[in-house]
Length: 187
Image 1 (cartoon, rainbow, N blue to C red):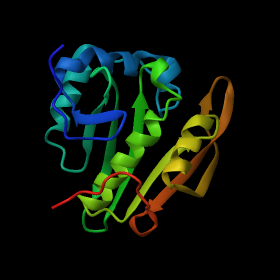
Image 2 (tube, rainbow, N blue to C red):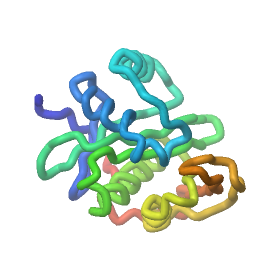
Image 3 (cartoon, rainbow, N blue to C red):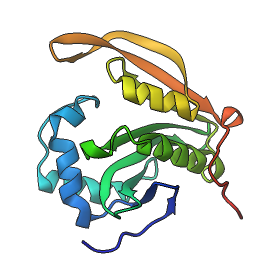
């Protein structure tokens, strides 16, 4: 695998652009139902669908996607993104998917979230960053809380998974509430 392009990094993870060279990783993410159960939809994805999606994203001004790399090995382990970016109102939504099971529970999600929050607030000028998470995804909820997100709402019993209806939790962080322990952007 080629050396990744890195846009910015923390201590354990680095973020770079989506790339067709990492299609196998994205395929693994999108076709592992244990991983996609935490997303809004679990369905098989073909290589062509994913390739077309990457091409589409390069033209989408309302979203920014990054590949997540494990810094120690340089291997891609997932992806993260800001979506529904509204520059006028300074809002966006956030999401993250770590595909490699052995990379979960190591703080990579929290560090990636902090990097993305820092990017959203300091570079894009976002003021209100929000996300949704299903109540059964306790590790993600802890990750988001550690990064500074707070719950502001709940949509009850709206997500069917594993034979049960689950609540969707809405969380947000304002730029004025963000206390980043990572190096700040310098200009």
